[in-house]
Image (tube, rainbow, N blue to C red):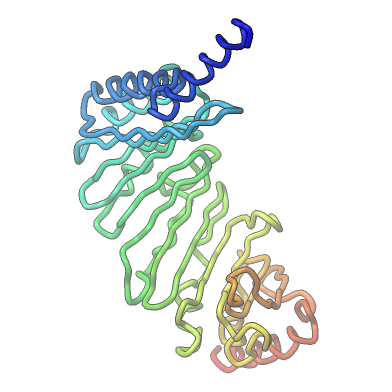
Length: 316
């Protein structure tokens, strides 16, 4: 064997030995970067703990997941001072653009979480801190939305839908979502800048769902549905998958929202199938409070609409 080949082989064996022992040059470099990141974040005023997890990537930059916990009840200026520059500094210290940074703390009795990077940071922090209340269990903010998770309730509070004037609605380009666990059902309201959802009778919609269909039922109200770009109400769980939407369950729900001037689309669906991927649905387009056509598909929509109109007329 030539001297050159012996040298290459020796280097290869040494590299493998270092790697197996966790002491490869790459591992040592990551360890040094991790210490620098932890030291920087731990030195920030108000930080109580730092967790750093690095996932090596041989093709792209390493993936860094960093969690920072703050003292309880910090002021908004203190929070902004930490998160305003923290991400850029960690990116520089880690020498990686694949950094996810979570900043967490407790405000009153509400858990707060900022996931960086995110849009409109300077506006989102004070807006989110203004709506903290004893009813809110958790506030989470990410690059495109603000999520408000409320404590479980037996019935929805009156006027629970945030108005457009709420400081947390219409923050820059961020979507704001409200989540409620109501008894055995779930309710979600997704706001979009400029759309007033307060006239949609979500509480009555939930009450209209038959008792035997309320377990794991979902009521979702979107100011602007991502797929159809309309103001949409979706009620999920009104029948068994494979048997179609139940007329007796769907008609009272549709009856409640007939005449509502805000809604442009109502989607009534069965429960999800066993894989939680698919449901059967009947869709009603609405204009100025009235249903346009017979629903889609018409054969399933027509009897639901007729029963809903009859129920609405008898209750007026």
